[in-house]
Length: 278
Ligand code: AMP
Image 1: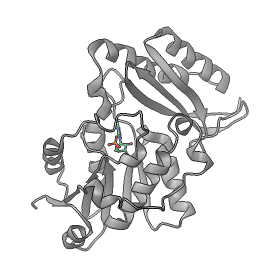
Image 2 (image 1 turned 45 degrees about the vertical axis):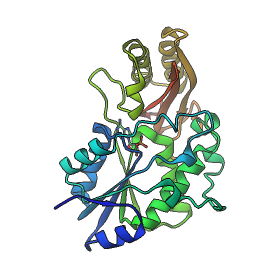
Image 3 (image 1 turned 135 degrees about the vertical axis):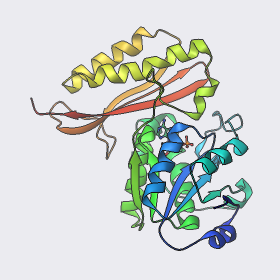
Image 4 (image 1 turned 90 degrees about the horizontal axis):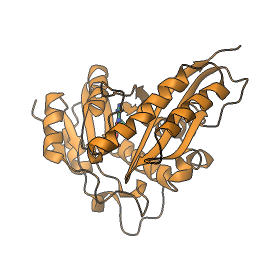
């Protein structure tokens, strides 16, 4: 089937074929991580919609909205190769009226960890995701664990607002050396990239420890070894559902998350681990 490019609600309605629909929201500059999400969508639904929209609402005034990579033609090739049915590529003017007033609040959970460093970011993410859900009306939506707090907040939004949509989280796809794939990796020079490897190295070293204190200490030591070129925003060991810090007695799944800048490129990464009773 020919790939359909939809620009607005009418195009989406016309493209609907019946059967189940899976949505994969992206900001484009598609890489193997996105393609892994698309493959999961493909095996679970009759029709796969990939949205490609660089959402101005989720970028702060000093963030990289204007220089965010836009590679629409090669994104279409990737979607064709993955047998995607519809690419939804709206214009920013069509998504947001100049006089818009109402949006989604991510609440307190949107102001901690990553949210503490990016005020308003998760409100912008949840607002665009809810709009995409309303426009595409999917049965299933697929997100990466790479953005673990985003995934947790989307699950929270679905629960809190009674959205009739199943959410699937997909493991992070990495380069062979451990670097998590990201559209922003293309900003990294060779030297930057070597520094950036400290993120995944720290997470691996931390995840090999047994207690929250050892996990935090070990991961922090690896980040410190990287030197001043790595500007760490946070290292957090949190409950995957609430993103609150876990204490010493915590049992079960936890997320070890890190954010750091290398030069002007800000990277995030995380791993999931299990804490057992001692
Ligand atoms: P983005 O285009 O960066 O907004 O990401 C779109 C979706 O792809 C989000 O659900 C991300 O979590 C997911 N994603 C980004 N990078 C990866 C990766 N390396 N592995 C798996 N999923 C990813």
